[in-house]
Length: 227
Image 1 (cartoon, rainbow, N blue to C red):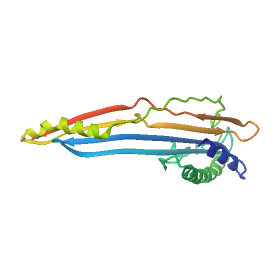
Image 2 (image 1 turned 180 degrees about the vertical axis):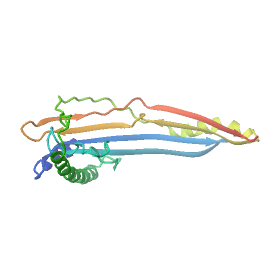
Image 3 (image 1 turned 45 degrees about the vertical axis):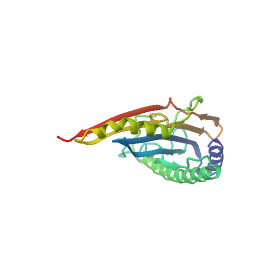
Image 4 (image 1 turned 180 degrees about the horizontal axis):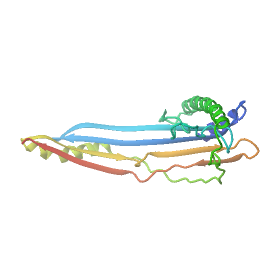
């Protein structure tokens, strides 16, 4: 991601309307869910996904494409793309294609928006808020170890069969089951890579911030008895 980010910012800085800031954020979610009832397995599956957010800004620190437009609803919609599916395998070519395609699309939207921002600034009265759209700060790097997601799925399947088996002895139970889930974090594993500045004030630092709390187990049982 860092290599592709550097390549993209180098290319976009040569455009007629250059980008001065580019950020990639990837959230990876990995979880396992198993359900059994009356001593039999109902479902067992593992889910792995990666969601990509891209932030491309054109203009400058004082006024860029994320600037608020009069009468427009506030929110993140102009700062980031919607979540983009990213390959879960570390295939360099596949990742490069997705990153470049959506980086280019985000840049084109940012360029169009900057034109709208500048037009709006020209016709409206001077804003009380004169703060820049992006402040210049010292880069911070934080890298934490990523825990694995090792789990013996057959062992847990057998465990849930055993735990839910006693429900089968209750003749008037309509349903008696148990569900167990394990995930790698409450909010997914996140990697953030940013590159800011492409002119004389260029900031060549990069930030990579994986965040991954310790994996957790959760389980819950449920039974419904006929009246």
